[in-house]
Length: 164
Image (cartoon, rainbow, N blue to C red; front, top):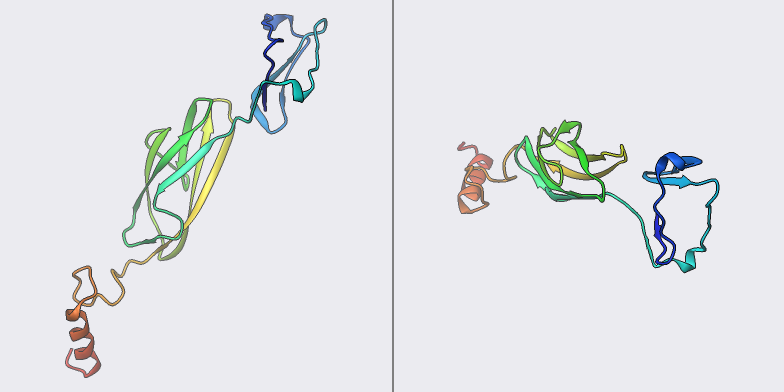
């Protein structure tokens, strides 16, 4: 959590600090205490309160999509107040950091795609989606033209009566 007080901002050299630490669960936030100048302001006096989080967005494929090709090119974006230094998709290094993509192989059926993003503060977050991979082409597309049409019905009927 970052809290800024409009009337109580001071800049002290770090070497004068009595202790330096991090907030639990917030490795990107440094807490510095000075032995002769510790003041506690109630939160209701703050002028700006915000939480520094990673925002991960998987733009393709979307959760629940049926994917017809493997590997699939997974792409998306990541936003952080700190520098993003690493993005992996199912353990595969992605190209780019704030706008990224990675080629990910899929197995037939349901696949979980997990994106992990790490910042220069070693803070990381992940987002997962699930997709269904079907490699037999469009189900019922017997003539292989990518659409279900009367040609598929003709082939199916011929198979039923034993002509194909």
